[in-house]
Length: 626
Image 1 (tube, rainbow, N blue to C red):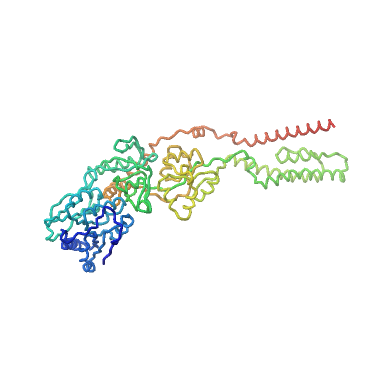
Image 2: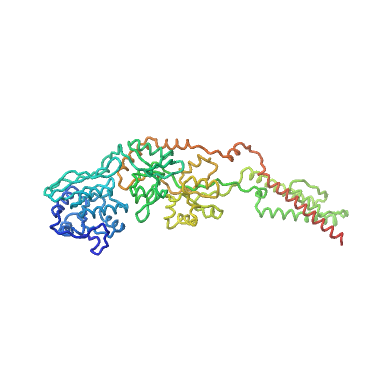
């Protein structure tokens, strides 16, 4: 089949030339293309895609019949200069297929330049470039800037004397791709095979190489030092620093560390580009990146990852729930309706006992004794607080009522005493924040929801279209991002300690915070969110991924990675806390906090008494004056 990509009316980029050569001006012939096609197809059962420029339409027109019989796809390489169009065109080429590209040297260089800028995948395809012209060999040198390490590519340059110059890629110690002239081949002779250097099929030797590494400072995991004139930074300490030093030492490689310009971890965007540290790796500005980089689908679209060297889960971290206010602790043993019933009983029992005593004295005993109404009221209150009974009445009816009243008072006093003791011995705390479902309540209580800005944590909530993750994203402060999105984990933990702040982070960070500031100062939610796996980010198709994987697996199988992590946390210095020190030296005795309610009641009674005295005094003066 034949696929024409673009049309004659396409708006071509400035670097693309469309003036067609005549057959007499062309060195590349149909026979040259046929020899290359036959060589590829006889040594592989994979599909061959023939990309050609507009200047070579006459050659392409001779292949429709062959394309129907063989596994060949013909594509016109004319392009409108948009990365999206180029990405769609390359998506039509099959995975691990062969691509024979025939065009002018300038157009071929421009094509690979656009693929590099648009972060398009080229490592899955075996490229055979065929070009001609006086500027062809110069274009081979220009291509070195845009061909990624790990790209399987062979270049043939047709000379005026009928020979084919043969070039293969070579990567120097600094990771720079160079094309080496492997000699000439007479185009009249058949090729036995076309040899590609596939870094994935056999161990890739990195010994002695010097790389650029991308880093992002991370609390207690990567600590950066001074910045050098060449833009690199010094790595001082941290768990990830110790880990990458072990890996690079095992591979006998060295590196220089560089930080992203926007100083964020970054992520893969829907349009195929990337930001932050992930963007540095995707654009091959660095050979690999490390900084507690979580492996996610969005990042895997633009970069590769080594096998994980650490794992964890996203958690909700907040301050430890504080004890509830003890000012009303004396009221906590009974619910409101119980207090209403007890108060009503005390107020009613005075008149009831007084009425019984009055009726018995008037109609039964008939002894003419005077009975004080207020005295009966006051004794009801004495009974309820276990202060004994001062009512002297010999009548059977009054004694029966008082007997049951005393029993009522004893039961309530015992229950109140027991519940108050339990309440003071086991203090009540604020409701903890244990899950995403608790976050709306937390925001109503004045908490701010936050996470690391530009990190994978933010991206997961930001890209959610529905469900609890979408609802959680709406709870972040988007009007003032500085309140919800922090630059590093250290700022986040300080906000947790100093204000009402819920920090969504990895439990690896939480473990470091606990070691530094103490376990009692933080609360981690019971709900464990998405699992997170941490790896080293590498460019798509980079040959360094395989050697890194082999070293990481050996370190993991030997338990060395776990030992490095445990040693790192043991060496984290703890920050002294005055609160912790005071709590550790305080005995388990009754404090003013436990008794503050009793002092409040005493003060309240004194104020009521003083107010009553003032009212009586004013009333007495008013009566006297009249």
